[in-house]
Length: 494
Image (cartoon, helix red, strand yellow):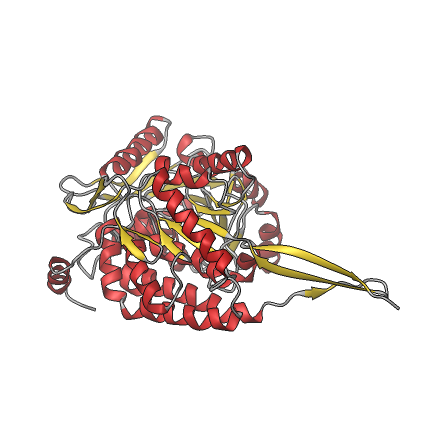
């Protein structure tokens, strides 16, 4: 790992590409407009990226449709797409330091996390789907003897991937991997707050041999470029990660236009349940802190509701407070930093407003809060004695705020955990095998972790129940979301 000074020197030498990537070329917005990119750790402007709008989206969709129809990507053998995507993944690995630096400058996350987790995770996502695509088979239906019926899966067409600012490249590649592997043309729309790594992917796509129009990057505001994609009649599918509010809006836009598929991974207010029979409270406390405070708490599946049995609550909270000390904010360019800045000043104020709301409702502030000075920094917050009906327990804060909710019985813990409009993730800590299975079956969440928090890899799907969305990223299941299922029924002649 480079030193802080070495990272700073590399940052000073950066030549940041700021244009959108359309039809194999970098290009300014049609009207020449740009928007500022601010480093949330220093408040300095680091770039002015293209502010794409409807005219730019029209061009991108036209290019994507032309590429899809021409078939240079959509019609080639899956093994051929695999070779190109493996090169694409290798190029991400080859450029890991520059991509990591761009991610940290853009989002405020620690450089150690960008270089060790986010960028390698993005490459692994592309590589996993490259390896998977020529191993996905169709089916033959069990029909009568004079019929041959087979079920095939074909690329859906033009896919718009709208991704958030918390893990821009990693989540982007969760969607690019299966969509490209299946043969689609993909338009990547990053958040206006975190577009730099997506832009950088354009030149890597060219180097890998992805045909022009097959992969494009549209930058700009959600209400302009994102809205144009959502309402475009020639976009066949939108895959989205972000807020529940925007997910609902995308579904409305689909219903009012061409009924494009909308696969949404939305918000979460995830329950982390610690039972009194779990022996290793030190480990549970460490993972509880990491589960809530990693990536500044800007994680849709963050463990923001801690449900802890009343008999161990005070002892356990003391341990979590101690574990939280390892997440004190520092300059994200410092390789020893484990917590950086929130995405911007506006979001910082929103998070601090929630902390005040919790206190006004009766919660006790045990630690953390505002960090005065440059940058959007907040120290890890723990609110004790939270009631699950409070807004801080029901609404997604998307920051480093842990809400502690005591419970008396197993059934009460289950009821509190499920008393949420969300259902993305949940965890439980117990050494009782019967309790583990009993509780896990009743938790309403797309992912349930037992005696760990947020472990996993590309082999398992990720997504939620209820208002946490309807899509699934990762695993073979994601490929299905970017294909149409076709039945071909053949009547055999005697």
